[in-house]
Image (tube, rainbow, N blue to C red; front, side):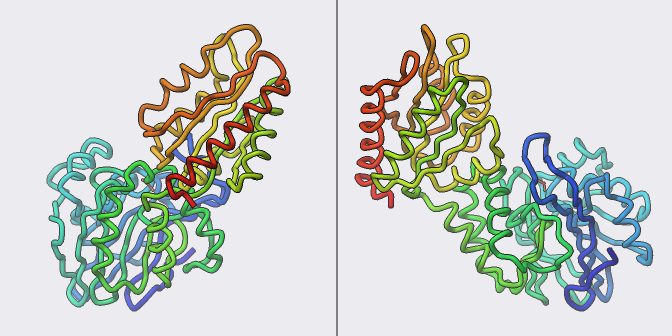
Length: 392
Ligand code: FEO
């Protein structure tokens, strides 16, 4: 695609990665992604904001074909999908300076091998004039690395936010046209990389809310010409109180655990608790992460394999632990053949989750009538705990 004009002398460039299906060898991308870079031509200087994942650098070069000079390369975030092409851009534009936060300087040198003399550090709140356009840099740490910052273009009220507010969507649209799609994709992205830092993100939202913003221009997915849509969504996701939701990730090998989680799901629903149930053998792990943004309770369903939880369950539990969702309650249900240590082992895997453990239901063999009653008791305990804690 050719450079696309957002406003006078401000262009969306970069690359659309239509077919990428996995990020960081971890995160499923059902809708692909984009690496948005932006070109701002001031009356005196020209700035490139972010670059692209190196595998798409040829698209960036094609869009810069007519650009004779770049004075500044703004690096909001060192991760390679945005800054990985900086060394190649510096080869083409050897006079350009890389503008970065104080913490980013060393990271850019370490990760991208950019020489120190090419990097110019800007302070939080510092401004850089391009002539008739002024860039103001706002430190927004932990969205999602420690060095992250955003740029506010004062004359045009545009916030260039990099990962912050981004969504992994490959699209030919410049602006959001399908809010439902973008909401889910942005929530998936928040869950997978920003949820652990939600208390710091509160400060970042407060900081950027001081500015009049007409457009948010992230470095993944479409731009927001109604910024309140995504800002309000973020405020909901970072709120302290979870919702009346139980998430049940499970695996079943011969049907016992499945019988239990199905019974539990119905029992929770009868008691007014919304349930998200995921068979981990087939689920998109990103969907599980999305539901963890709001859930008050997680109930892990696992059979026992060599005394331990099923390894696929272990993976999901460890993921939940590192994402640090605002869960308040947890439990385990499942079955074993002759002996098990699954509950103790799962409890030891979730030190980051500040949860109260509700009585697990672990069954030898296939669940019997009394086991189903124990699951009803667990469902009632979840519903009661949610009510007591004003989880609605
Ligand atoms: Fe889109 Fe953290 O990189």
